[in-house]
Length: 268
Image (tube, rainbow, N blue to C red):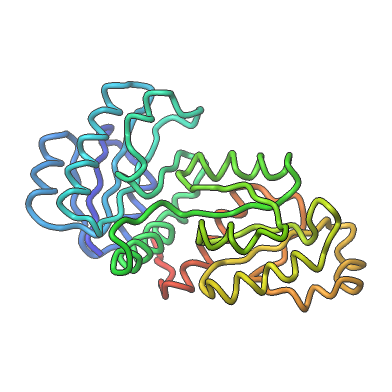
């Protein structure tokens, strides 16, 4: 894969180090003009743009760079590295979601970035052959309201689209409408109905065999529930015990998607 990294700080970035050492073809740009020259010179598979989003002028510059890259190379994966780990500032909304695929800050392990980028790049090229537009990773989450909100909060920080839902008689219609990359379902719904969730996993497998399914269960109830409600009859890619953090789920999701899109684990 051909990679372009824009690093305005031009100083020892471990993410860029790991990403570029996983690729045989890498270009660097430390200023806006150099970035434009590189983008216009040849196509890239992955573009990483470093952005200090505490500055609204840098956010506008990032938007312009992503706009040019997306217009010239629709199949290119565009990743934004935030140089601040705080909450997104309101002016970050000036960058339309369609212009980039993933964003991260220093919580992400640098050694994990090559696999994230390679997986999402393969996903983008695959989906672009089927649809004119490709959204960010999308998931449906049917969990306890508090736990679900905590999970969504972390995932949305990385530009993942998360849709809260409930497993009920209308679940199939809701799933068809969203057609997500992954789902997180608690083993029973808010009414304590295990069978309806079990049936939902079968519905998902039938409608979208490539969807990653996670089923959650309380750790203290796992053994009892597994035997009483026959977890072996559910369809799932992994059974997770609560609590599950957004960081844990993102790691599992990328690893599952790498198998789906046949991505070999890059080594920095």
